Amino acid sequence: MTVTRVPANLYTAVQRRRNRGLTGLYLVVAAFLVVYAILFPGLFTIGGFSKFTQNWFPLALVTMAQALMMLNGGISLAIGPLVSLGAVIAAVTMGGPLGVLGGLLAVSAAGLFIGAATGGIVAYLRLPAIIVTLAGSFIITGIALLLLPRPGGYIPDWFSDLLAGHTPVAFGLLVLFLIGWKVYLATPLGIGIYAAGNNPVGAYRSGVPVERVKVFAFALSGLLAALAGLFVAAQTGSGDPVIGTPFTLNSIAGAVLGGVAFLGGRGTMRGVICGSLLLSVMINVMFFLGFPPVAQYVAQGLIIVGAVAVPQLTSQWRAKP
Amino acid sequence: MNAIKAALRNPPLLTLILVVLVWIIAGLTLRGFGAYGHLRYLLELSAVIGIVAAGQTLVILMGGIDLSVGAIITVTAILLPLISPEADPTGLVGIVLTLGIATGIGLLNGAGAAYLKVPPIIMTLAMATFLQGMLVIIAGGSAVSVTNAAVIWLGQARPFEVPAGVLLWVVVSIVMLIIIHRMPVGARFLALGANPLAARLSGVSVGRNTLLVFALSGFFAGLAGILILGMNRQGYVGIGAPYLLTSIAAVVLGGTSILGGRGTYAGTIPGAILLVTTTALITVVNASPGWRSIMFGSLILGLLLISGREARR
Image (cartoon, rainbow over all chains, first blue to last red; front, top):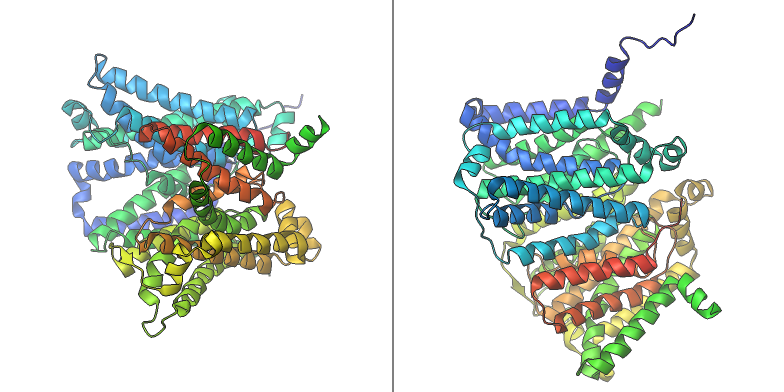
């Protein structure tokens, strides 16, 4: 009797192949972390580590949100407004009768709903994601402005202390999110993201519910962005209807640095996490080296081009001889 | 019936009909909307978006997207007053220099996309981020006033009761339509947008055309920047930011496919006017900023459903 033999090390082989393109990124991140640790030895205390991960956490979440969209073959221009909306909803509802739990639920529901609605429009009405999210960014910004025309609102102090105090709670949450992503990837809807992003027609013919996969991925993306807003609100202690604006570009930058391909279906969450970590560490290092804050933009522009161009060029040179 | 069907299948015409309908209805119901002065003002604002969207149309037709047009506008609006030489009373030297810089930035975008193989969306995004930082370092955060005579003329003069900016837009439109529909280079752009591989195998140079298209986009963004500066008389960091998304919206509203290969500048023209009219009407309604933003987004989404659908799988 012959049994289809699955090599015992299939899992490690697949993982190794996925990591191959990321070696350069890992090295760069490690180098930046070493520089940062030398400049700021306080990184190894609990407090320093907590602060560092708290600055990184919202960026990591929005980068994951953007990566979900890009794995689908789209791109979202509405990440920043969603972060703002999350922050605003948190600041408006947490002072209400339902308290923190109510606020958490309201933020999650808003993120899921807006994401799913965007996904539904993209998947079923066949409009490109980039222009749907472009129109959506105006609508979402408008809702945030209606809820809270100027910065304010209320976040309970204990909640701010819990998330953004002197304990690495944010880092723990990030680990939980990553485990959640691994679990989601083990479901048909999760693995379908890669299939549908890489080759929608092929995936459709192989029985992947392409439309449903899209709607779920968009909904999760919305959830992550809104939760990032919740965290930002907890960090600042209030809501601000435009606080999320820079996150749109940063999320794209982080995802691209992390090796997510623009045409969909290629990229890994570990790369994405490293990409966002690189951005975050880079900003910190430049701050400690005394660069003016805007120099960060110059460096970011150069690094993004470099991160995409260098692997392209090296693979070309390797292919030539 | 057949005429209606033909119109529905022709997005530029559809957008034009929408504009005419909106103008007629608004002109009949809103006092002051149909006045010549107001319509002229709308066209003046449309001209700016139309000129930015000219470059954007070319890039999108070729299957790319230019996210750096807003930054290029800001760069030209801030650099022009700084680099216009005092010795030149006409101000034309400053304009030529600034347009040269804008075109150069576009060329860099094109070089990145063509030779470094960075996807246009990332390349232009990185360029926008880079320029944003450079501007603050070079020019500081303060606003600069313009004294350049030619720029002020462009922004303020009204030969034959028509604003100079609108005349400039007419010229740009004619040039654009000739490039896209009457010149081989336009056919090459469309071919590259429709199927890059087939175009390359048919002998179309991807590198050269990519460079050209991004250089043109930089040039048109620079031209729009100069026009905005003339109308505003002041340049400041962030002056170009609103024009990035509106330029993309104008192109898409005009029925040009965001995936490239299909579309025309003839659609972008009514697209730009429609966008400005929509904004003007929303302002008239006198709602809070939040509601205005919601209405604007919903209207774009609604219009997209009419003209922006992609083909069925």
